[in-house]
Length: 239
Image (cartoon, rainbow, N blue to C red; front, side, top):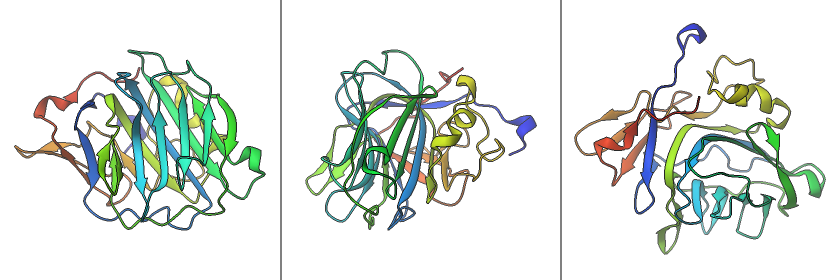
């Protein structure tokens, strides 16, 4: 949209029990890539260790964002053992945070993953021992993990402005994305690349009487909500 008319007045609430969003088609943007970036805003309810973003591979995860009740975050690639991590106490309860997770699997082992919270590099360790992101024959999931046994570790709290870049590591552009704590127009923010997927979450979301249709502001990877009521769209946003 036009940068002069951009506004952010809505977010989506997840109940932490069974709410989630799923793309209506297979999410294959990260298949075989060595670089990728997640950006999202969250107000975590600390209900349980949870997965705000889950890209599902054939047998595990391709790439996933994890938040813990200790206030720690992890970026996982390929499985739960390959990750970049922060320390504990990074996330605060009842507080909006911006999270930028970046991976470049061509870099030295200790630099492959980066996790920024509110513009600050909070990465304390790296253990990502793969050269490419595994392919995904499945949808993208927001707010839950999905393995062969079903969905688990549902996220509780608010989420806003979820964006994914394929083939791009934005660690050097974290301040442009964070935008001093106010979500900005990612299509007009001076970034080296616009996102490949961008869920405004509340903005452009439409309720059809059964579910929320979540429009992809970057391309056509639209999502739909599961188990959410009409009240899931809220006016509590980062500011």
